[in-house]
Length: 184
Image (cartoon, rainbow, N blue to C red):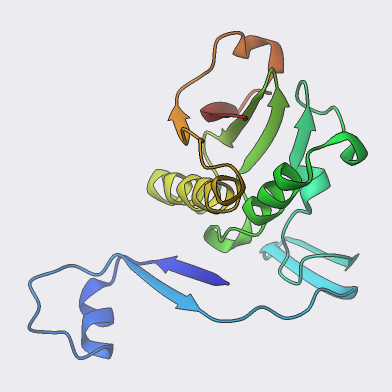
């Protein structure tokens, strides 16, 4: 398990870590550790001072979107029948859903279409920068690949851009296709 915070205060980070003499700039602080066992709990989600909700959550401890809410089949919004999905693909998508993202917002979704896993991400997110969104996409892509390629050694990895026929997945306004992964 890991998470990060991007920072504009490089000097403060360097001072706290006794790295003031370094000519490098601190841009991200990464924390690593072991996650807690998943359970049901009441969660207070604070997006802004005027946008607060209390909810019962199952699955992820952090206020993350569960795998079945983040992965679509064929096109945007279509649920996945997990009983027909390759178990290794299921594990890889689960790992992808656990990837760290800025403020745990998970600005990305996946669409399973035409032997591809297509990564779709928000164009913008309130309170985050484009760099944060790109970092979020990279983290979820890395988690997916680490698991999927562990099962299938002939994977080619992520390909940036849209696969042919991508217009059929119907990504909504405000989202764009970032990359795709050819399934074995």
